Image 1 (cartoon, rainbow, N blue to C red):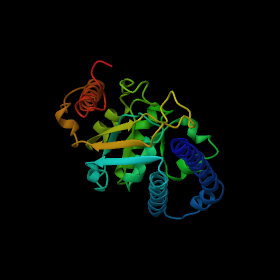
Image 2 (image 1 turned 45 degrees about the horizontal axis):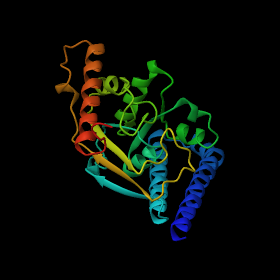
Image 3 (image 1 turned 90 degrees about the vertical axis):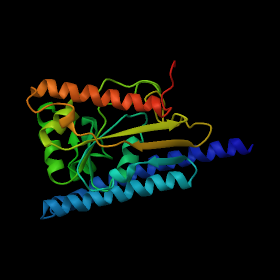
Amino acid sequence: MRARLDYGWRLFATALSFIVFGVCGLFFSLFVFPLVLVWPHRASRQRAVTTVIHGFFRALVAALQRMGVMELDVAGVDALRSGTPAIVVANHPTYLDVVVLLSLTPSACCVVKNAHWSNPCMWGIVRAAEYVSNADPAGFVKDCARRLADGYSMIIFPEGSRSPAPNRLHAFSRGFAHTALEAGVPILPVLMHCDPPAFTKQMRWYHVPERPFRITVNALAPIGVERLAPREMPAALAARNVTRAVEAHITQYLFDYGFFKTGN
């Protein structure tokens, strides 16, 4: 009986969290975004919007923990909070990955799917925060480089969508590598893991695990692209080498940390 009550509470708390997120997103789009448009100074406007989003996601993650829905384990995340612009490259096992990373990174911009630009709960947020759409490959690198030059870190999931299986990644796209080469900033690899699996590509929001899920975030040492691709190397080949090296680096650490299991 106690296990059933606990499961029912976590199902209710999960539904409530999604509702609160949707209502707050809709409120921001309808009432806050119009105020953002008339803010006279772009730099201070972006700083204010970023601070609000960071604070909201911190509160949301704290609420999920307090309600017993999730647990959070972090390591090496001082690099996310340092304020030094970097390209944060992470694997993407769950729907909550971006929420957790934005809650841990005070000065962050992120790449979002083009569908979010028409989502009624998201369109005002992504526009006000000047997030980068993945729909325009030609403008992607330029937009990311501009946000990095403004002093923000870029959060990028190079898989493009959530991982296809608990023990496997999608092939990494090269956009983050082109951006790192263009902007001359380090790449900060981040390992994401969720146990038991929750909010994966194969699961609906109401597929609540039998116990609170634990999201683990491990930020690895930054990687300078200059050691992966010499300056004289053609841009296309350099981006390919950087992408392969970072993908192999993250995959190996996922096995080393036990997040991926050999033989599965």
